[in-house]
Image (cartoon, one colour):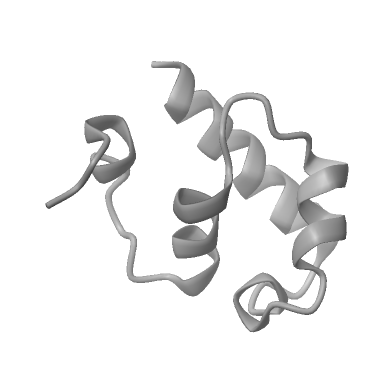
Length: 66
């Protein structure tokens, strides 16, 4: 039973990095802080480039705003 509908509506949550975003990121989370906290998480490392991580992080934040 999902606790927050916007998070459940994000679509393909089968991706490990997306799971991490859904579990740990709120509207107030900064990308720099997210990186510091999850640097050793295998789900964080599943996306190879920092640029791609940031792009997906920002897309997730946009979805939370809707």
